[in-house]
Amino acid sequence: MFGKLNQQEFAINLEKLEVIKNHIKNNFYDYKPNLMMLDRLQIALDNNQKISGADASFYFHELREAELMKSGLSYHQAHQQSLQEYEVSPFSVYHPDVIRAYPDEFNQNWKNYWGIT
Image (cartoon, rainbow, N blue to C red; front, side, top):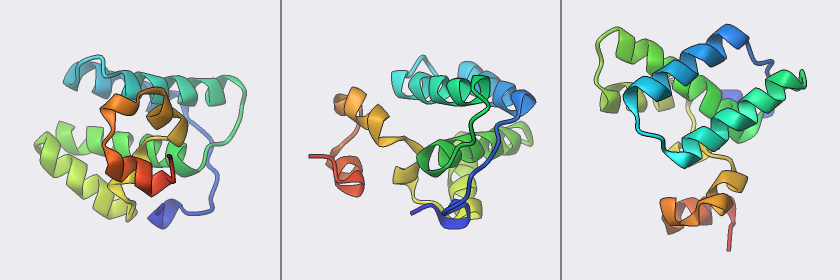
């Protein structure tokens, strides 16, 4: 499920979070699930809490994707490479609370993955 990130906790770095925010702002429309994930990361940073699971998967995925796109890869290439590098499922990058909050944005595969009924 979480590949190289499995059963680990990570501190959020403010500069890296800003890279992720700019990456999302500059490359994607205001997709509410992304914004909710960014809010989750910001809250964790503000409260000096470590992240794990889907939050860590999103954080590292988006950070690596931003680096790869900046080096010239297309979104699709960067997205796939980032998933492969961390050995995470594509379904792991959004927290189940985000999927529950925006059920129309996620198909049944996402819900099945997280056991959401």
